[in-house]
Amino acid sequence: MTRDRVTLGAPGFELKICAPAELGAQVSALARPLVFTNGVFDILHRGHVTYLAQARALGASLLIGLNTDESVQRLGKGDDRPLNPLPDRAAVIAALEASSLVTWFDEDTPLELILKVRPDVLVKGGDWRLQDIVGATQVQSWGGAVHSIPFVHEQSTTSLLAKIRKR
Image: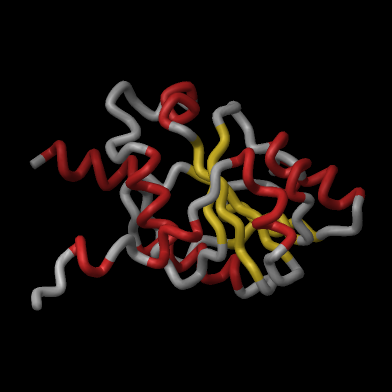
């Protein structure tokens, strides 16, 4: 008997991908404190995975909100971004040990999602000043904490793409 996709079924990490409409029950089942972060995570690199592991260490569960493809295009990262469509980005992020649950948002900011899930900890990367983090005021209003995690590895998808295109 061969071990192929048909006999093995879908990978277990795909169970960590949750549509925004179904978040209520999924989030309530997560251990607290709940950490929330968001981003595009288009081409995953060492900076991303280090950041996500550090974010997870701030609580018992990590919920990651991904920008939809349309939301990414409105961010002005380039006409060809994202390179990886949302389902692929969600699967890669869900496969990481650090992630507990992965969802997405179509708005320009994750504020609506943050208000819906009410995380105990809100996290962004070191390029964000605390006062500029979307949802910081709201999370602090219900007693939550907000962190800007300094970069350990200075990498970005944009600079990686520039390097690739240069060759």
